[in-house]
Image 1 (spheres, rainbow, N blue to C red):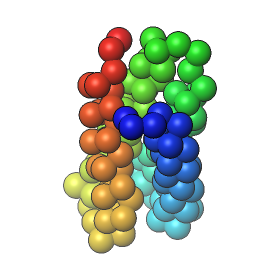
Image 2 (cartoon, rainbow, N blue to C red):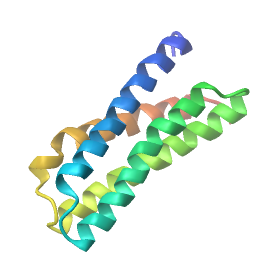
Image 3 (cartoon, helix red, strand yellow):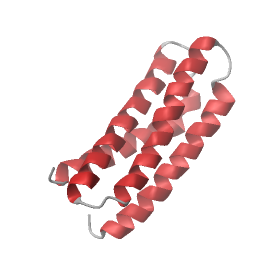
Image 4 (cartoon, rainbow, N blue to C red):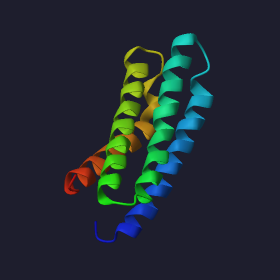
Length: 121
């Protein structure tokens, strides 16, 4: 990370934008049928949690606290991937409708996993 402040600002905005996209996706596609509604709510929780926990990461008081929050960010992002995969593989959602958020969460997982690996626990 060249400048932690720039990184924090960039990804606070990006994860918040992602959370908004998850909310819109849920509102548009996840209201029909119990299975889809349940999986969608799980994705809604984990997808918005990525942004909330990244925000907490940027406010961390110590490197250990920041590392811990970043671990949660990675975990929640991975969980979001999982719920999307389940909805697609079960045939509840057509994969074309998830392309944008799938690409974004895949990229965020890679970025935050790499960042976490560079930090010392």
